[in-house]
Length: 312
Image 1: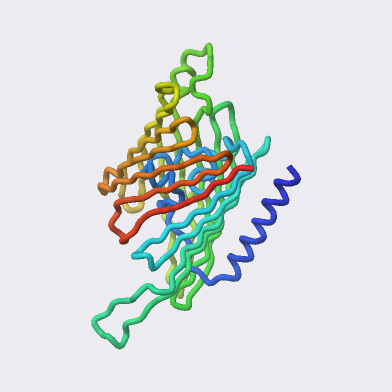
Image 2: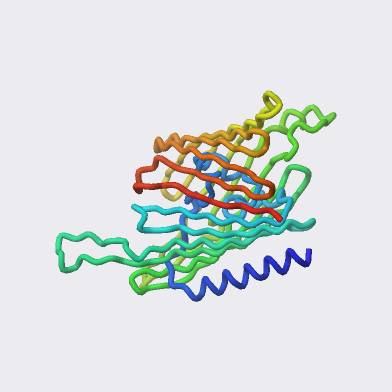
């Protein structure tokens, strides 16, 4: 435990030093996929995540964290002019497993298009968010979580900070087909259900007198894990819905993951509302996980993400 605390304190102080030594444009939207697995599944598993990705997506999933974990992600967007970097670390313990994460979206070459050539210019910005998340096990399979976030924003010479909070609730059994005499529990063991409330304490950033509030976003997911097939294949399929009440908008997603021999992962999903197809894969070697995800979303010429996860 002492080794774990030294590791996490080092990351906290290094992240804070990065945060306050950078000019940035933060407050990244909560729907941004910062994890190859979650992108591959079209967001349908966001609120039932139970690994280190829970630091960003679903803090209650941290209650299932088994080992000291580290992850880093890279994603180019908007015609490769903007890059997204995300690093996080999770620490398991018997009381409140917790984790920290740092998101950095940066660009120095976004062009402002105008009919007047004399005012054409490029804009640089950086979007930074710092997270502290914790999960708590209420009973075997049921957990809750809270995430605090600090957003720092700077663009066109204006900058400010804001804070916010998210909360979540998760039902997920790690061994869904373990023997139980309770027939009702036996039915629900392979089922995972989660809900996340983003911005229950809304983050807001004031730039040059213009206040930007992050709206309440509600995400929920439901999945089912099938029994092992052919003694080597573990399938799980799920569906999710994301609602933004302030905008009257809802988005529906579906996805599935197939694990072969616990080492090779195949994933796919479909964002039903906006007709976006996502696919991805993963490879586990000992305690190291390499993952790739991509989306057909036509926001950029290349919309993919690479990430590395390590357990200690």
